[in-house]
Image 1: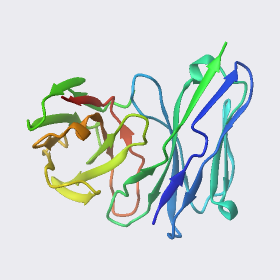
Image 2 (image 1 turned 120 degrees about the horizontal axis):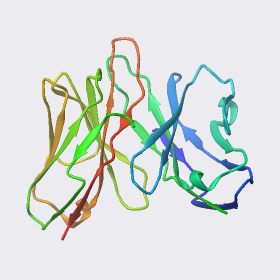
Image 3 (image 1 turned 60 degrees about the vertical axis):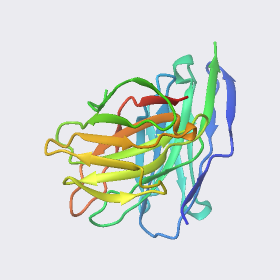
Length: 117
Length: 115
């Protein structure tokens, strides 16, 4: 069965600190996709990144970076020099890659990040 | 903004009633997925529609049903509402092709409260 675990329920940091959000996944598929979404208080899920299971290169986008390690089934997300606007709930999600089917997303329970000024 | 819209924003119903939620896809997308997000939880997949037919379903009872229209907009219908149906309902649109799984882009959600 597929599963996503985000062990950190809540994290609180002070502005400009770096913070890493952990994500561990389980799947028996060899081809799959991993995602991170941000959910601000307004409720809309904002897409941040998608990785496929064959691409283990780490990615950096501005203050955001992602570390994908198949050996440990982890896909961690780091925010460098956090800002108050980063305060939100962050979800990690997993999707199988089935031909002819838009694989449904399996979400973790989310990590609530609070960045204090 | 994703271009995915949902209506209404908020809704209050009583137990046993029926409700219809609506979603308009992002331009160029042909697939709509619906998710239920209970308070403090991650979204859970309800079902997906592609070419006006159900193309996958999560662990939800038949009283959750849907439609997709030729313009790719969609409706989620819930009959015989129960208190546990109170949640944020999220719609996501994407482009499904024969060779790829695309990213799902979400709308702002409809918050349903069942009293």
